[in-house]
Image (tube, rainbow, N blue to C red; front, top):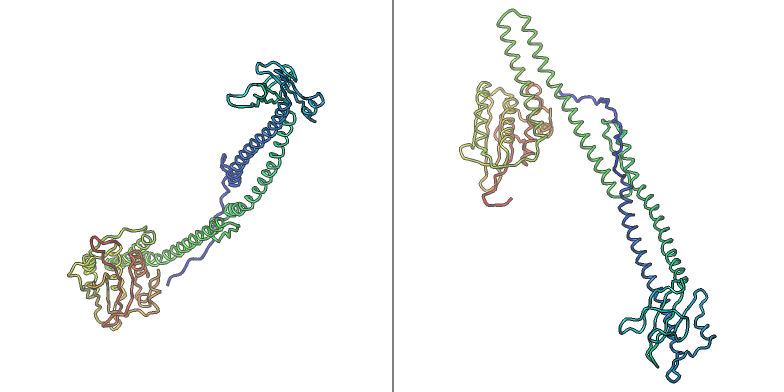
Length: 487
């Protein structure tokens, strides 16, 4: 009877938390950089475009007012004979040139640049060909001015130059810059603070997870229960909990497996030691031979147990296998021949049926060979009739012509197993009452067959024998697809 090992504390302490990697920013900093830097650049570009548009429209408004003043002056230029004169009194000229914040200058010029009226020395670049006026920035009496030159052809050609200082323009532009940048800058800073807090709140579960894992013992595989308000963080927590659950199940299985292995190997090893000590205490060579034979049988049992454990471990760690057509009849025939001498020495009638014709199945040769070997070995160990009659074992391969299924069956005439025991006997270290009474094996044979069948995507059936008491253990395999077909 097997026993599970006690769940002892392994004494593992948590490793110290790794120091932060220099040069790598935090997740919070990286997220804020990816969000705020493009946002700030977009904001800056938007401000520049907005200011450029505002400056353009402001300049056009001021220029239009300056041009209207030039037209007003030009409308008051009259012809007196062949001469031109400005029909504005000094008071009217003062009204035209009046502005609360700017100083305005004007000049009426002949086409050759001779002053007709206004401020002497006030000149501006002439319009381009086909244009009536032109705006420009000039300097007059040491002051920067915005000027427009209006060219008029009636009643005679003359030019009107209007210019004004730019203090109002500069003041308005500064106001536009202030009221355009300051509110948006405040909004950007507020957005950065809000986003920083929001990101910190969303990253806090990851920091808590890091702290939990840093302080957790290596033997603690309980769920971490990661919270959070985002799907990604919840999924990360679920993935970690699922990983810990799988690792925990694997660790528990390994502990149980190792404990059971130690328990099962302790008996044959202790028996071998006792037999060896008893033999060494005897002086009769016949007693030595008897003890050596018993030691050999005990060693055979221990070797078989080790082989089964290795086979089961390889099956558990097997990667995805590539299946290919396998000659099932040849594998079954070789297995029967391999066990024939053992069956003869035990008085067992070992036979075969259905091996005369070639039968191919889709699978892996090593796994199928392991299935046949373990089924025959189990039948030899446990398939002994209760009434003392001769044991009989038959290995049969049955292929239905109208189906892609091939059945490999090993039938014995032993006591069989009940329906309640079938599920249990597929587990490791499980034995029926007959096997425990006979002290044969360690309860790994059918578990290896079940695992191999699972890897082959086959079906394992444990059924009563059809014509006599006993067990019919069958594995249903599939034929390879016909050539040229797709699977």
